[in-house]
Image (cartoon, rainbow, N blue to C red):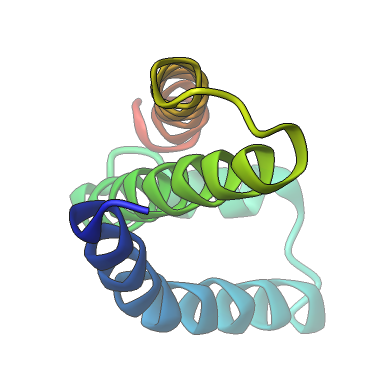
Length: 109
């Protein structure tokens, strides 16, 4: 694998670590606090903090997942680099697009 992809995947993992813990912590707080979906949305909508938090999360997960998928497909199917790159970029861009839609749905007013 290309050294740049290796480094990008490791950096995305480093970015994801605190975001995963933050997300899990928020979910535990919401569940134990008995918050409804409406109460959660009232706290996230219009919040630049949650927009940036989950926006960064989406980008990091999309990069990490796309590179990981490329590696798995390379090992299993032995495809040429051009096809691997096409799959990686397609998966990454679709993931970012769908993730951005989800983030905007819970943070935009």
